[in-house]
Amino acid sequence: MGNAVHDKDSQLQYLKSRLNMFMNVIDSMDPESTDLEDIDRLINMLDELEIKQEQFKKDWNKE
Image 1 (cartoon, rainbow, N blue to C red):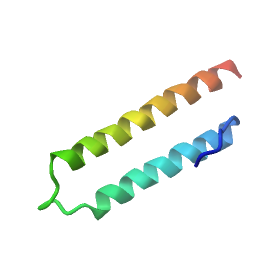
Image 2: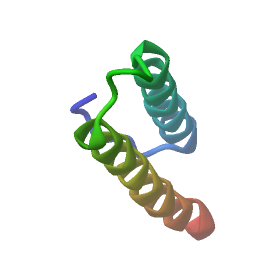
Image 3: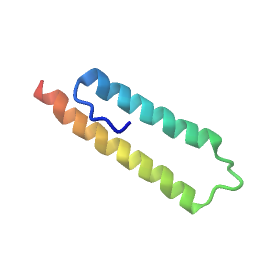
């Protein structure tokens, strides 16, 4: 996922892939052993996803 994505289809695929990764992380977590650090990582992942979505949205509005 190190390559830049410029077209809308690639950007949507990137967002879907990142969201799937987030869901996989949640599914793999054990609620009994999840600690604050784990929750912070999840929040960070969501923040990064939101930043990317906002960047892509700006590109889409230019079209």
